[in-house]
Amino acid sequence: MLSIGLIGCGTIGTSICKAIDDGTIEAELVAIYDRNLDDVDKLLSTLKRSKPQVMEVTEMVKNIDLLVECASQEAVYEIIPSALHAHCDVMIMSVGAFSDEKLYKTIKELAKENKCKVYLPSGAIVGLDGLKSASAEKIYSVTLTTQKPPRGLAGAPYIIRNKIDLDKITGKTVIFEGPASEAVKAFPANVNVAATISLAGIGFEKTKVKIVANPALTRNIHEISVEGSFGEFTTRVENVPSPSNPKSSYLASLSAIATLRKLADPIQTGT
Ligand SMILES: NC(=O)C1=CN([C@@H]2O[C@H](COP(=O)(O)OP(=O)(O)OC[C@H]3O[C@@H](n4cnc5c(N)ncnc54)[C@H](O)[C@@H]3O)[C@@H](O)[C@H]2O)C=CC1
Ligand SMILES: O=C([O-])CC(=O)C(=O)O
Image: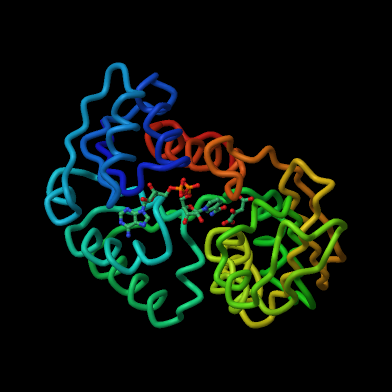
């Protein structure tokens, strides 16, 4: 059975652990870790059958097949190289870290050297299949337009740096427009999806991102528009925010669970 270690006991981490605990994912939850011990305790209290040990990454990677990161972009720097050195496969949610080309290259090289896989779930978006197909030929443009209720953008470095008072926003307001490379640094907990799109398509500099605060919304909306030699498509998802973290859409948790279910299943259906 696939043995899993998990870093980040917040919203997505808790959903994944519950899905292992109730058998939705056929895997063993061997170990968990979070820099915030209260989050570890809270997660442990939700589990009925699994009894993961609490251990730091250096110890964890000696005991698992797959390390799951659902913590933060900085955690990707801290834990993924150690996991790959220890021959563990990894699944990463904080994909925005890969806007650092040096980190991306290092992780890709380490994965090759140690014969490991790096899994990046689709997260809170739909349409990566079409984007990946389109990228076999010429793509002219990729644009992500993300709309969130203002509180879903709270705490982002860009909001703090520009002293944007989210409480004063009364109508649909464009907060940011720029390349994905800047968007994922300015909003590290809001548009990791821009990184996933960049990696599947035309890269971090050419992928355009628009972030809109919209007080009329209760959902997180991501629209992806792609134009290429194939033609053009637009996908749009209206995501229910996670109750425990309005920045993260529930679909992101489900996407992580779906990826792990696939990895744990000996039978793979479909192309
Ligand atoms: N790829 C995608 O589509 C999506 C990615 N995300 C990203 O996934 C990650 C997890 O999201 P949530 O569970 O909603 O966040 P959350 O804030 O609910 O939980 C994150 C947990 O990780 C812990 N943590 C953060 N940095 C850490 C570190 N360096 N070492 C150990 N623990 C650390 C925090 O204490 C917290 O308990 C975030 O980076 C988020 O931005 C979220 C939604 C969609
Ligand atoms: O969950 C979402 O809507 C997207 C998100 O936070 C991210 O990509 O970081």
